[in-house]
Length: 355
Image 1: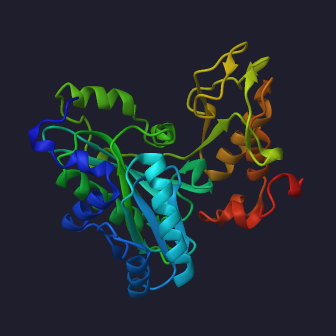
Image 2: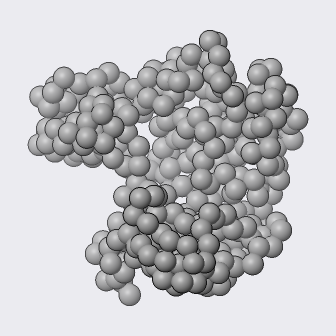
């Protein structure tokens, strides 16, 4: 659906500086920081001192972990600003950088929202995307083992307030960073369908793609907030063509064998665009499949994911499955005791050193 004149604000949501300003206007919690472009490393240090260390230096047009540095002192702020600017300019053609407070032991929690052209909005609970490697999501689950009903409601209502403020019409995701004390702050809004949308579909029973199409055709949302369910637990593993035993190096070649686990309605789903005999080249993203499972609770979802990963048969290229299978056995993960620093904390020398 084309963005009409009244949707001028939606286009700004892809810009991190502009999106934070819009979030502030919508009274959405934002991380303390400096939301305008910064002239140089000296100014960056002064701003960081004012906010208080640690701080995060981020490219306005950034994404996928590019153009991002964490600084714990003046030296790191000075050097981090310069390297962040250079990386952002090379990666995005946009060297604007901003600084914000770094939340310790952060969780990455995102709220799925839906809006139509008739002023109706709902939030579809949260997804926990805290298991990350180099800021890339490895495992997503819904709901979060950390979020309680009161926090879920507060985050959902703020996500809807932001979507309403920009007259958003479609499925979108409002991302938050959540501290160990359950304080939460707006990160960014993804004005699109995300890779992990199936976990939300499993716990709500809704087809997000169908709802997007209906909204784009001008229909009203067929549900209200009271209709949104939270049924059981869902998890998704991104199966990437990379070698976890060699520092997650990309793996290319022909898929000599590609046999996903059998799909089971309501329990196991596989999304993929590759096939046995096909070629995995260097020119595309490394994700070759998504394995999504659903159970009555988190323990059952973990067990189904273990079984699904064990049944996945890939030959010809390496995959991330061995690493994800290890995560599914890890006591901290199984206990829900993790944050975005989990992988570097538990595997500081890489996966191979732990085997």
